[in-house]
Length: 378
Image (cartoon, rainbow, N blue to C red; front, side):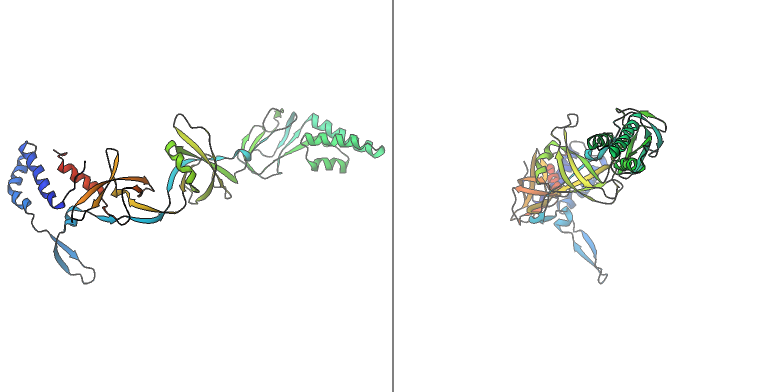
């Protein structure tokens, strides 16, 4: 356990430690001689002269070193402040499932002209990707053309509608269907258009390639909105409910992106014991790319909390302590406290301290003094 430590006893404690070391033969001859020569001066420390330069008049004054100067004990007042819990996590940028589109056909055919001829080409919705020839589509066009001619002579709207519906089901565009009606001619070739705007992340055809209905020709991904998959440890899940504001920053990009909670995956990674939180964020500038490593800073709403610096709390044997100033000057009493991390510099005090209490800011120094008293350095 800790003891109340009067600061004026520390020189004698340090002296006794050195004497014990020498008596047990743990100091060198030079140390022994210096001990004999300096014993008297250590019992009654000489006045230490400190030169203080005042910037106004540049004069020098000589003053005695205070206890605070000798032992570097800094005290602070426990206070309430408006603060918010902040949690920092890491993850990766991924594409949204709903913005990934496979381009394939409902018929077999051959690539006559390939317009989207490079991988990762950016395309816009409706842009021509390839001109293909398909015997099945060409036959459907001929049937529609014959229905138009037959309907002009003998009214057969049902047959005309059926032929037109077949072309639509084969993904022939409305522009091509209207062109057949206007020009009264069926083109042997059909154009495949981009269903969405985005980037071609996969291309499985080349000029002259044959394809079937089972073959994916292109994979187009729209990156106007992306997800961030954030890794959370199990003990961080309980705080997730209170976290409302999320700021994402990818390495190498100065812009901070605001994100929204989308989904907490209902299972953990057994290899890492981590859960995955999905955040949704706008990517209008297209700066965020799938696979990027990013940092997210999540925070809760502002509240008034009792806050102390992390340096003012010390953990010993699994218990947190703070050193409270007593009514006697230079004496400090260790108190058990309960704290919770607020950020990388502060703790929130849950119990053990009250507002306006005076505590030692550098608790590690008090632990060192306690170790000296208890002979931990012998």
